[in-house]
Figure 1 (cartoon, rainbow, N blue to C red):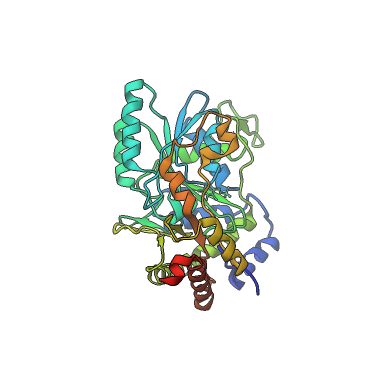
Figure 2: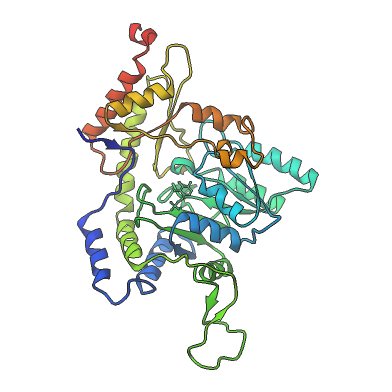
Length: 392
Ligand SMILES: *Cc1c(COP(=O)(O)O)cnc(C)c1O
């Protein structure tokens, strides 16, 4: 029996043809595919500008720099995220802190953020940038976050690495609320380019800055000195090589054409999980009437109650049954690296409580109904292994 993975790329013949066509073409990098992918992504997300880069980690790093994050800046993010959300601002020299999550959505809590902002305002220590994360693909409360950003004067950098295809109040994420939004196209994500990332923004100046930063800070436009000739380029910033290749962009554009159908399958699978897990001792992912998750992850929280096996026991039983469950996420401030930088256990109790029971079940567009049935059966068996439930 092969393992049913928690996530898995879906590659079809049209994806393969798109990549092979690039291999046979003139450009492997810096050709027409990256701008075509950016244009398609921007149109799909109803936003003016899209800048493709080599990974979401690079996207977060360059977006932080473009938003002015540097030594002395304060940046806050969610503890319930992948490491990169916190590493990117730290790499820019910022002081990084965490805002605890809301237990049911597992997203950064607006109420906790508001209280922390009031305290920071009184202490003269407001953040310059806040990086909320649309966990598992469920958008945060973006209208409320925007109101706080406007009131306290910080920029909103949205980590929508999970949320390609999600909508908030009827509009795609990345369109309307954040100052910049980051997407990931890593192989386990909703749309893949193998490795890849992208930033969307409404601000043309921010987009221009991102394009500069992803290519060594160099430009052939808006030269500062009179050009000696057509070969002249100028360096205006400390930049990097953060570029996406033509192969990746062609794959991304091909995948984007299937986003709606892949998303529809994820929705269907999530709804079946909701129905079939309703009677089990676990918390299912929250839903909100004004937003649609991309359903990157189907993350449950095993109840901690008498007679219910621990998450570790359920995890082991599922893996023994060849179900590739996973855990998202160990709270970032619990990592040795962050502990060594003064972050302590207990600072984000909601993220820690969620983590203690967290388990991500397989969810991807190629998952069959029969495989989903095996996941549900294995979970029922794992949860009913405790004597008290077996007797009930
Ligand atoms: C995957 C992920 C990233 C990093 O994405 P890469 O493209 O692998 O660099 C950042 N933030 C979150 C929330 C992620 O899930």
